[in-house]
Image 1 (tube, rainbow, N blue to C red):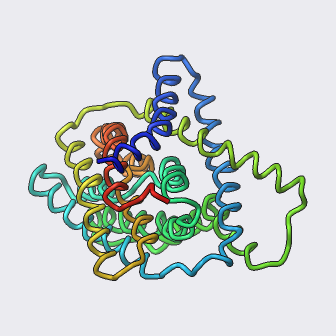
Image 2: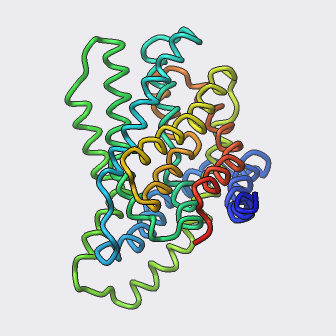
Length: 315
């Protein structure tokens, strides 16, 4: 109980920043253009710079166990299958809607919320394992959902679509920041002081700005109905996925640090990309939007609980 209370106190300021962003957009008459610009800056500059700095010491850290990917994405595939069965049997959704429903059960808010939480509660030593999953996350899970939707609608999938997804992942600033920082860590070069200090200042702003941007985004998505489906997505995301990933991590005998990192990722609320995917395929937009807000609100309590059970926050 003391560990849980400690983690609640530790993470409360992070969720308070999310609430601040929500209040600014929902009640503070903050212009949508300003919120969009802030989110773009966070994704394109602040977080990539933060990840570059964190990964620039990668070569001096103990190696990351590659079985981390098997545990995390194996858990995602298992939960995806279970979620599609739930969507079919309980809600009688069609194949495309089943796929979006299942993506909501496995696609976490790893950037805007996950990176700040990992950095604060697990420490910088957990970032390499966290980043390893981030590099493959969008590629593998978006491809899984795209193939699932296209197969449901047309009985086939397009290699061109997968190729486009691959190109988008490679050119993603988040992935670029991780890869560039990792590559830099294997050189003997030192950044000029003025550049290093500038990057440090940007990195310090990345965490609070990303959380405020998340809150603003939640205000934009809003609550749009579909409560039964939203509750199911939220339950699968916040309960079943972390349990499944934890079970696979234990089965594969992963080290504690890697286990904590990937279970934290699995325990995070639904990511905004799921809503973008629902818009792209024009299905289940309301329930997904509601699940974004609901799962983020509940994560303020569930995430510290998961971390406490994992023995985090005592570093």
